[in-house]
Image (tube, rainbow, N blue to C red):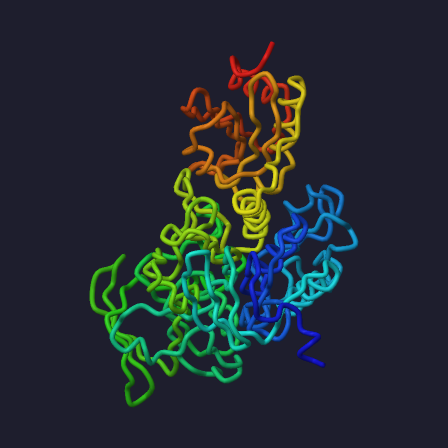
Length: 497
């Protein structure tokens, strides 16, 4: 009877989604709303994905602000809530602010896990749990997915398995070093010297968690430490992990050291880490009781590289088109954390937020719509706009659209121009720029290399695209008469008089 109660028995489905973390849940919800039949499979026993285990020290790096300048739960509020999954009906939503204890606007890991479980329950997202993906075959009409429960055939396959596979660089001795995923309880590091290899979020998270316990902490990697407030994106360590850096600057015992790791070896007293200084040249060796590799994760791809799936980021992430489709295997898509491998403009050198829920949830909504239109004949979004509405509509999106604010220079609101303008919804900006199509405008938010936040309009006329930055401003008010004039000038000649 228990087996009969589990959804999605082996068989053929139009779409198979693998994963029950944020990416899988959001993709499944969106596909269901679009009427696309699909099966969701997960090796886990319940919703949550990586948030059932990580972050190690329990506090997320992405915020949810229960009290913000806009109505809680509204679309505009998503700009201030980076963690809640999205649903059309209020009764299907599971706002993370409902579950937070108020001690921080960074949710705890258990709070995030409960929010994902609540979303799956309220939104009715069915998942076949305890069903592990083991292999994949390409077929003439799609794919066959082999699992511990049997085989699943599908025309479209969506992998929402995150970046959960511990990854370490090919350095002598590194294979013996415990990974971030193997960090022990903090008290077990009491009075010890700890070398942490890596200076991104996980490195500083571990250092922050061990500060009250370790005798000395050394964070080491070739590049200097950067923080998110400096990089204007999540590519640097979150600023809330500044305590270990302050300890370093003030000589408190922590060292934040720039050096390439040459070799790691076991020594009589524990470990020895041999390095070559980068910012300050020279050979430096560190003795330690414990070494921890905070060198990141990769997407578990199993046999997919052998089927033609190329990767980026030193083999850790699958390479994707702007629509999150494998560049080597048509019909194979990626959602969730793995969607960070999609083509993007990287305007001003900044990357997307696709590695975080705040970005991946929007990618999943756009992906589901793309799959429905491309593979199942759904009608494209094309809401008519009166010519006099276009500028007001775009200014409102610039001011409040959470997709534009949370995925700057990556997702854009697109409106077709001409005699009968119409809203084409949210699209990847890289796709819009490269596409040859009808005259249209895409608006997004950008942060330039001086830190100025401003809107931008990309206007396509006759197959070529002209981009124009609109005024920024310290108050972030982009709905002014000045912005109206600039946007009208950008659209001059593309709108009926």
